[in-house]
Image (tube, rainbow, N blue to C red; front, side):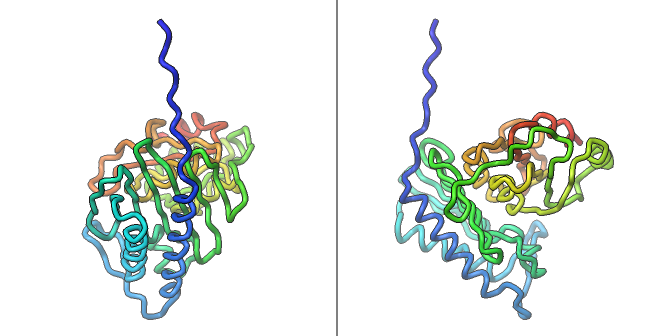
Length: 269
């Protein structure tokens, strides 16, 4: 019996990609008005994570831009309630990814936007306004770094590779010992910045043991379109909840794909 032919999702509309990039950059410009401001107030949400007026304003701007152009699209965001839609498209907003960095005047924070349509992951944008960088991808359109096509690194060996992580707080001593023994260069260029570095070939891998949906969503498009591989920390589907936590239910390992299985083994708890 012949197997059914593989169904390939069509490329996403390029106009939607350009809208997403433009909107996310506008949100980034807005957040810079609060960045390094002496009067910035940092509040705490119910899960203990920080939130600022810049987070709320950036999400509000993105929601308004989407509604004005695509009023039938659904919207999910970190700071406001979900908005239902009828178009079959859903946008996911993380207005400031890396609020801890943002609130400390560290320029590695980003603005994230993701689109999922009836065919699955469609668009991902990582905007780094303080660094003047944007990495984005559209399904079937490749990955782009400030307008130039980009791709993951070509390193073939785990030894000597550069691996970033948002925090070492959930690393066990055994994980660090294995990394040092193998000769992996561990850095903490974390949050979405680490994934932007992987997608643009500047580092080889990124690891996050616990994420919220809006933290990981854009990477579902960006890493594969850059030619890399993205899984959960256990090697499974990163879009399926796999962490026992009420807020941070996802995990991720992103890499250039050439030694990904070795990373999964290295990073076992």
